[in-house]
Length: 135
Image 1 (tube, rainbow, N blue to C red):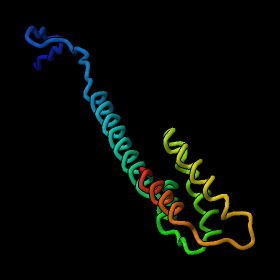
Image 2: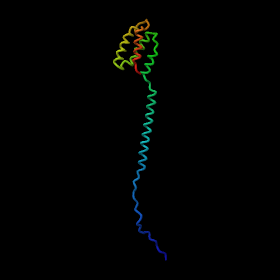
Image 3: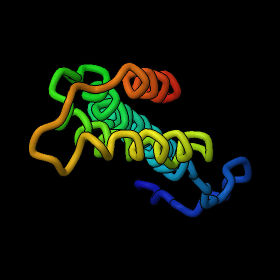
Image 4: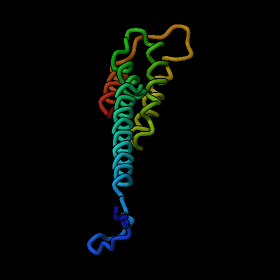
């Protein structure tokens, strides 16, 4: 005679299945998001640095043109100094006053068909104005 097995054996040392809260996936997502945010910030700062480095600076360009100006042609020089010097006239009240003084002295070299060369006094004012400019 074969004895039938019973599967209803009472087990006292095995606990029932308990739900385990696993947060490692959320930790991974948070770290990945922060890493992506950090990389995006670094890329943005590098982009801004390159953009600033290659940006056109009108003040520097006008100062370069003003410094390399050929003063042998008085009429063209007077117009160029008036135009390029206007970039710097609002830097301070002293700059504005000097610019107005310089343009008043250059008036005699404009609006005429034939003009003489720039006087030593006017050349001195031009050099003084160039020295005052901070780029």
